[in-house]
Length: 179
Image (cartoon, rainbow, N blue to C red; front, top):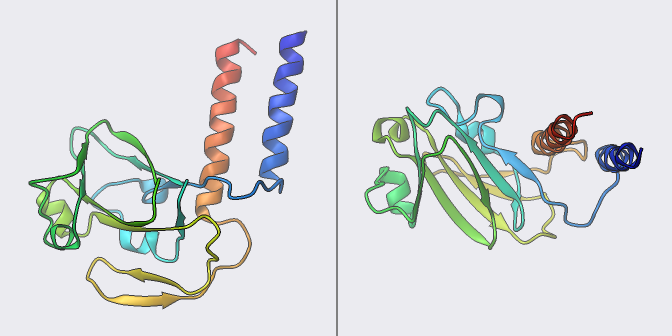
């Protein structure tokens, strides 16, 4: 009976948070590419356009480890030329979570040069936690800059992704506990 009480508390806390309970600077989980994930047919530039990435957020890459890998690069030049010969890190597991732990620009590309040159690459400008969403400047994969207006205050795709992850883990935990 104690376990059932714990389950009720956990589920109620999750539902309360998802229905509008708002903690200051809550971490957002961004699933790169949305439902399609990180694959050659995904328009990563369109997916990232208008998103705000803050210190403390996480980006998730989901991909076929047999067909793709992800390289984090040091410079804009390496990113633009798809030069993954000297990466900061390589990701090859098929599911990678990366904490955005500091301000600045981070560069990610497909480890396959042909996929990268066809647009399978992502740069993320990480801003401080309290930065408003207005006047966000993004750069497309072709290097042109554009200024974007803030999106409405309704939940974004990343917020829904965060909700999905929370509910997934709660469901997984409930199954694991035998409920």
